[in-house]
Image 1 (cartoon, rainbow, N blue to C red):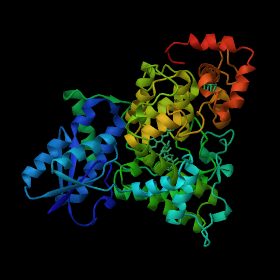
Image 2 (image 1 turned 180 degrees about the vertical axis):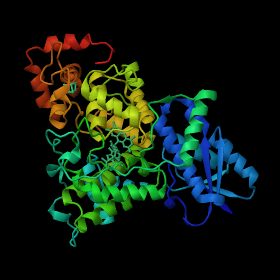
Image 3 (image 1 turned 60 degrees about the vertical axis):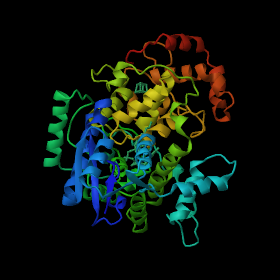
Image 4 (image 1 turned 90 degrees about the vertical axis):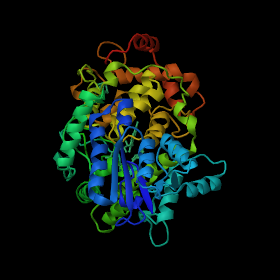
Length: 507
Ligand SMILES: Cc1cc2nc3c(=O)[nH]c(=O)nc-3n(C[C@H](O)[C@H](O)[C@H](O)COP(=O)(O)OP(=O)(O)OC[C@H]3O[C@@H](n4cnc5c(N)ncnc54)[C@H](O)[C@@H]3O)c2cc1C
Ligand code: SF4
């Protein structure tokens, strides 16, 4: 007899050969939480998901609580000697290393990864066809759409005549509103109701903190994200029918009074393996076909789910083991305490940063632009160590997993790969934040100022970043205009002095 060992991010039916049959092994490892502090909300989410799955499977599942995965595997094979343990290729290099070691000892059989729109073989073939051409998300994404017939017309051409509707998406937020719903028809996100499994998880997490030396980041609070297949499907349905239409247009916008905007909140259930990315994309495409959402919004969303998400997954493996240690801009500053603890003491006065850190502290979540253009931008400007930053993001975000954090932080947000993933650094001054949010109006700083008491630390930091990295960035033609601006800066020495003296304190 065979039994499928599923990791905590392989919880959907597609990780089993027959969703209604077959034996399963689920392992809860205390070691993971002992090693380093994770966000309390994240610990809750992953445990709740695993335990809900165990309950759903009932007698088909062996659910063990041990210190390490190896112990669980060995114990299971002792309990059921003739049993064959199979596992789908896991999502991190560390877990892959472990299952391969166990396989070489004859303890488990490793099956190909599941839950992706593109297999590693298909990606390798795509790379081979490209030859020496640069890796480009846009080309990859178009081929994924062709491969799965997503948003194509009967002639195989992109629906509406264009592959990319970015020009219709990514507007600033509506003015003089507190929440997006004040200006646009957008429903509330789907929220779960906690149950007895959640109550038990909460009790256990408290006990581990008391008796086992486990520590957490951030605040506890009601669970926000789906942990079962049924919940994930409900969250998908709510998003598609009530929120997707507003998604593309305000995808990049931020409002202090609305941290969710029109985002899907599906990264957590997707990364837990509860939804398959193709079923998510298909449902969004159906919404377009049935007139529930406009093409630009649907295209923007499909691009995220089967474009970006698949792309970073493939690049995580393709770019190699050492990619996580890349540091092309020689950024070596340690993360300050106020950053590490998510501004627990409320010291940060820069309004955008304070608000985004509060969102991470309270929810373990912020949408893409706060991650990239507030947190990532700040860390890039200040020269935080990219590996330490990756670890922090991984632990602080409910949807953080190694495969998705490494490319997004090292490559996309910190340019530590020298431009393999993004052609130019995502660095911007306060003018960007001011255009894309309502933060600056009530901030003690002024986004237009780069020197003095009221100078916006993002604006000053932008110029200081360019100044510090001007030689490293000189060959990048997409940075040429910014570097010419630096040459013309009358108060460049003042900015340099001011920022060099800034120290690690909260801005
Ligand atoms: C510095 C940084 C760190 C990030 N860390 C993570 C992470 O740990 N886990 C994670 O899932 N996403 C991460 N992202 C990508 C993205 O910010 C989140 O997926 C998204 O904000 C989650 O919210 P949502 O589900 O409402 O997404 P939506 O805005 O509704 O987007 C839909 C889906 O697209 C996918 N997606 C979009 N962009 C990306 C991307 N760049 N990489 C991978 N998937 C993407 C996600 O699955 C997401 O659920 C990171 C981005 C940055 C810049
Ligand atoms: S003025 Fe600067 S620090 Fe203040 S909210 Fe705007 S960008 Fe952030």
